[in-house]
Amino acid sequence: MAEKGNRTRSEGDGRVGALDSSVRESALPVWRLLDTGAQTGARNMALDKALAAERGRGLSPNTLRFLQFQPRTALVGVYQDAEQEVRLEYCRQTGIDVNRRVTGGGALLFDESQLGWEIIAAKADFPMRPMSEAFHRLACQGCIAGLRELGIEAEFRPRNDIEVAGRKISGTGGMEEGEAFLFQGTLLVDFDVEAMIKALRIPTEKLTQASLESAADRVTWVARELGHALPIERIKAALVRGFEQTLGIRIEAGGMTSGEEQAFESLLPYFESDEWIYGQRRRPSRVSLVSGLRRTESAVLRANLSVDTERRRLRQTLLTGDFFVSPERAVYDLEARLKDFKLDKAAIAREIETFWDAARIEAAGFGAADVADAIAAALDKLELLDAGFSIEEANRVFAVNGSPLEILGLGPDRVLLPYCAMMSSCAYRREGDCVVCGMCSYGEAYGLAQSLRMKPVTILNFEHLLETLESFRADGIRAYIGSCCEAFYNKHYRDFAASGVPGLLVDVNDSTCYDLNKASKAYKGDFDGETELNIDLTLKLMSVAAQWKKNRKR
Image 1 (cartoon, rainbow, N blue to C red):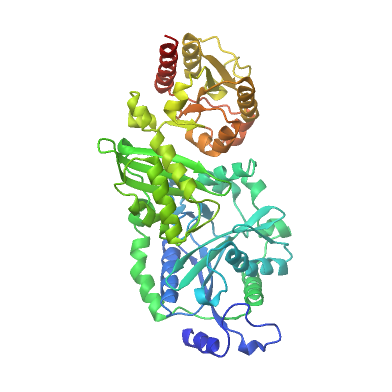
Image 2: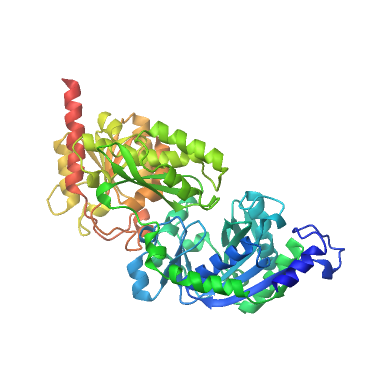
């Protein structure tokens, strides 16, 4: 099959789009159709790597591949931490496999109904740089044309999604391998929204960026758009015709080459290993870790830093999150470049900028400055060590609109407390008041704030939070201290930052509405659970702030 494809390309220009419709079909470049059927996550990932590697060495033909998963598989992006992105216990209990893609992006649940499609081709056969926005647009056209043939009016949405009336029906991403690339998409044929919400952590964060409450409001699928299911073979046939039409090629079914099969068998044990699935992006021990977040409109970056505080050096940097970057190894090269680097935020930012330019990095929706900001947010937490806080305590404090010490120095005089920390049976839970009865952590924090002459404010729902932050800004409130879970901070980081008011938020102690899949209820103020606040750390922050304020008055 590879030889046939090579002979055909030698007959004319093999680049996509190089032949117009008047050229005889027999003169079109021939690509291979490789349908590998339903496979485990590990087998599909090993196939991805093997096929891309062989094409990158010029030993196999340009290929359109179809793939499916069995059993259902939670897949994290190559730069993500599986423990952060997937509810591992739920997956174990329900028989959902877990693996890691060879490409970037966010976590997804690939069930038996979904159809994966991949283009594995030589870079030279495409007229633009792989993974650029122009490339994404062109590579998605085959899927779009196939969906339109089925009666679904799909469109490309920059940077790398295919949507129908504003709802995503196929996400895409890719990687480069030698002189070739692999570009893949996930077509939602049918969709189990509940399973996705329960299995993954990341999608609920993504939904926030579009101000939507549920996954069903954000995505769509073939059966939903048509009102009925279609045989998977009919969908595949439409996609084949779509790619033939938009890329100016002819696609013929074929099998794997012997080289691809050997590469696959060699790679499979690694892609089945915990080292690949969990170990590659595993964060260092929390004892020596500080972490920071940077969210842009279309990317989430987490900087996890292992630091030597005595030598003032970065021992290790791990950049994780939901993002796409090319070349693929750029993240790893940057991490290596920052190893043992001095703890100087300005110097680190300059080093990242220099590396970014030299490596000619293409990134979807973020740049060198955003990476530097994520690292700076992590390093800012080291300031708390000088104020008597431990590394573990520092990692449970989230700063907004300033560094921790800057915010403490402003003299916070408001304390934001979530209603969900009150007893579920408390008569004051919906009223924003408290009699400090001592029966819950909310009352304890409320009383402590009053004793330190800070004003406690009960947050009753998400809209009330936004109103409160806006009132702080309008009233000239200098800073505040509050409590929320890490998931809420990650999800609403941009909302907190948009207020412009500096604040320190303390992570809560136990299960939250996000862990219990009740975030939408909490958003409206209807969550019926009880959250345990971190009283010791909250009191410590309030006490330091009050003491510093008192010292300034002397």
